[in-house]
Figure 1: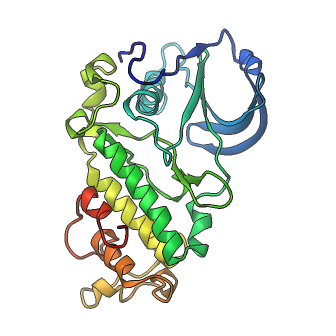
Figure 2 (figure 1 turned 90 degrees about the horizontal axis):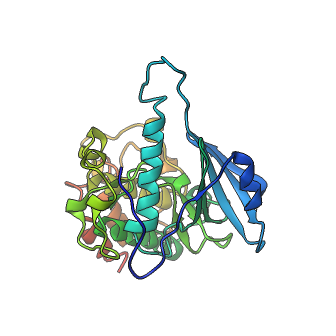
Amino acid sequence: MAGRAGEGNHAFLRVKFLKNNGEINNYYRCLDVLGEGAYGKTHEVEHVSNGRRYAMKVQRFERVAPGAVVTPWNDPYGDVKRIYKEMVILNVILPRHRNIIELKDLLMSVDTVYIVLELCASKCLSHFYPIAQNRSGRRIFKQIVEATHFIHQHGVLHMDLHSENILFADDTMTESKIIDFGLAVYKPALAVKVHANFKHREWFNIDDLSCLHEDLSVPQEDIRALGHILHCILAGTDVYPGEFEQPGAIGEAEGEGVTPDYMPRMHIFDRKAKDLLELIGPEYFRRGALPTIDKVLTHPWLA
């Protein structure tokens, strides 16, 4: 990995290095546990000096015993590279966007990284699906598509868009926030915009940008995920592909054979919404190959 001080039209965050994990209490006071994932816990915290509240992801590095075999599951350097890439994406590659989670602070000890983010409501897309109407569904989905288009313009693929990775700014559920760029990929060849004169060779080694996972990552994966989210919005519930009968070739575009609870609520949504589902939705609705993100963004339902 490479790295250097930031430049451009806003000051990039500088890492605060802690002598020990107890020093985190000099900066932030833990109030509650918001969630727990594969890489650690997320806490609601309060800044010791100004009292502002944030979300703080706490991720510990695996420590390998002397002589032990290093695997992808216990490689501490792999954890460091993943966190480094996520921080560079959020703090350097991408400009601020109101529908993308904002990085606020970054602290690190010898075995733990503390990632401080803006605090969102506890509600995710799953809470929105049952109450989504044509107008509100269009507004939220357009926000998500615009944010995805935005990161793609800067060469970033999220690669993990799903209900739990899209939160809301507050309990009104009117402004969405894409979170968790832990699996995100940066592909300089895809970038059509560059923020603050970003030069990827000054931040990444070539090996960081050419691993097998990244080589298999394409924009269509995010678009496919958007299609699944749209299906959930129209159905009014989280849809789990393995839990319903797949339709046959006859009537496939209309979703014939799909469990009724997972069918689009056409008494709520207009025909343009269904047309977009047939453009980017799961294969049992979709007609033809996935379009580009630009075509999705200019679809009549989102116009």
